Length: 237
Image 1 (cartoon, rainbow, N blue to C red):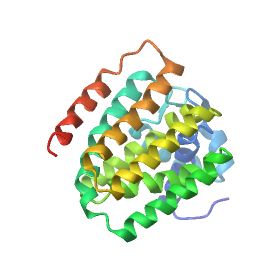
Image 2 (spheres, rainbow, N blue to C red; image 1 turned 45 degrees about the vertical axis):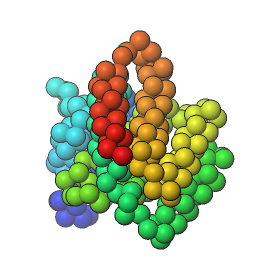
Image 3 (tube, one colour; image 1 turned 90 degrees about the vertical axis):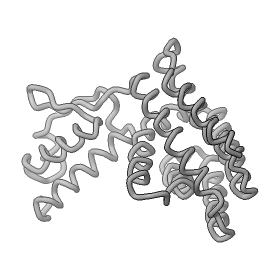
Image 4 (cartoon, one colour; image 1 turned 180 degrees about the vertical axis):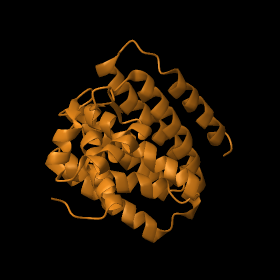
């Protein structure tokens, strides 16, 4: 039996469930019993219920009338909204941050890029995902606590779609790696115009790749509008 304090029990259960959902260990539309999960985690149902409530508030799960928990679906509408928001927030943050990137910063970013390449060669999605998160967030965090929090939230929620996009596709793995290399080069040269353009295209490629799987006829109007709005940053140059 897990023996931490009640608040720690809730956080323990929330983190375990959240990680399982975001990495597709618990797949979209999967349904499970709270009783079964409480037993598996070695905790009582009270902290588990609170953990599930937090995940429901986050939009990752829903609780049914029979107290079974269902993992939220992967939908084109959610994908469109998610990636449109990311394009807007991260383009703004990258445009702001790029002039502050010193050599120590860029060397750290470059090393993460090299680590990603090694994991990419063998499609080691678990280790690649950790370094990939560090690579991207390093470039866009630091504009302010409110924006940082939102960027991290939406980045994490993209993990479900990102893993669906990558799968075992050499083409998609290679395309992502090429985008990351181009983004690193734009940052090293201080080219804000190109950095914003590459980041936007990078997210667009992932989103359209996922749409080919879940709904090829869906038109991502929000994402298209977000891409247009980022040109306002480009035109400032």
